[in-house]
Image 1 (cartoon, rainbow, N blue to C red):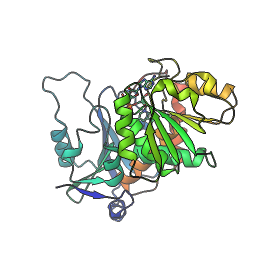
Image 2: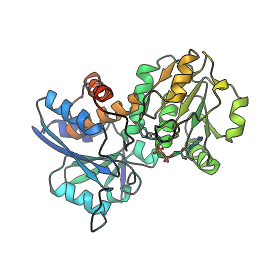
Image 3: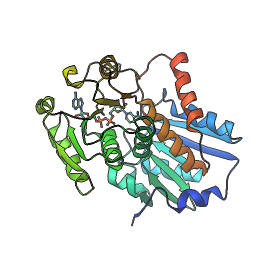
Length: 307
Ligand code: NAD
């Protein structure tokens, strides 16, 4: 039977008493070759004097035998991995294979970070913490009475939970798939915020303090904007979690209209910061990891990738 623990519980603290100088971790998912996460981890590990190795297990690479996520978890434990990051298509599928699920990950319904410790597997969702931390630091004092979230997919579930944690009073969720928006809203109603789903064709009639895009719209392979730019004026803040590219059409349009904005870099960097801390028990330097993330802007062409 699975236990549910809180992300700030004893797990990370117990690990910090037995710091390894050598840390082996990895990312399991499909089409992850261009992910910036391995480099953020390895540079931070080296900066802290660790022999830190971050391996990719890319299930999109053709193989004779399909990979089984349960077997990957067992093999990683056997080979001495300290932890794994998990991305599409395994964030939900991995959950039954873990011993303990953090309560935040249980709320989101997805795990993106697994820690191997004391012979057990612990699952976390650092996307939730990553968006919340980025929002708290980079959007401090932003009004949060009524916020519109576009998209109710995997990342949308983490972001909606984060927005509620950040004190949003009324969260309105809209998705092309209205049933998905309704389902996410229903899962969040037990919290302090009022959460509802609204058809996309009704959002323009409502005034929002902030708008958050968690749809893939705006990615280099999915260009365009998920809202009518007429909804944007300088009193509305705008956050986008897409980061290929960082400057989406939505953010460019919002900035041009004088809106305060938050790019997808914040969530991408802070999810890695928390995962690093869970893997090692050592506090990571978010600014240093952000600098590694930003270095890709000048050295790599835009490429779509998993997170
Ligand atoms: P997903 O496919 O699980 O969910 C996307 C949702 O958006 C779906 O429910 C879909 O119906 C909805 N949608 C698509 N187009 C829409 C539109 N025009 N209007 C309203 N709803 C629309 O995808 P996901 O895993 O949630 O990822 C979404 C995006 O978030 C991707 O671009 C991904 O790269 C990005 N992401 C960023 C980070 C980060 O750290 N910055 C982390 C995770 C995901």
